[in-house]
Length: 123
Image (cartoon, rainbow, N blue to C red; front, side):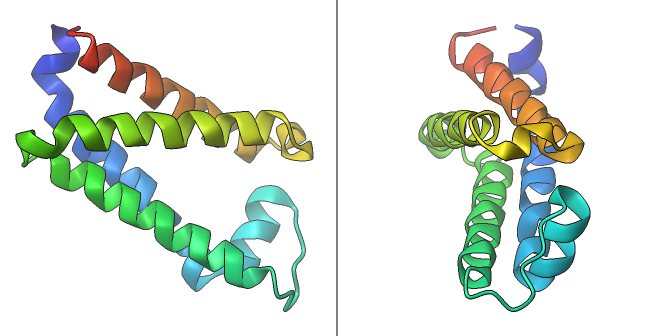
């Protein structure tokens, strides 16, 4: 029950951290170069990177918001588990698995998915 006692705080902190990926929208080339050593330099794929940044930002806001809306907590947390686990799989199956920051992101998301799952199971 330890997780359940602090779950709203966990949602708020993890929501803020997740929402931080909005940096991909505002500074996609900088974030890709510094975090993943990827050079895009005006590549049209930047549109998708920016879109990804906005989607992750929205997910972070939903996580934060769900801490104050118990009726929506379960569906938002289930969706977050799916999103975070799929991101981990994508990272581990790609060349990004050799990048330390990508591994930190994947590890953090995997840990959060486990914590969210433990909450849903009543821990």
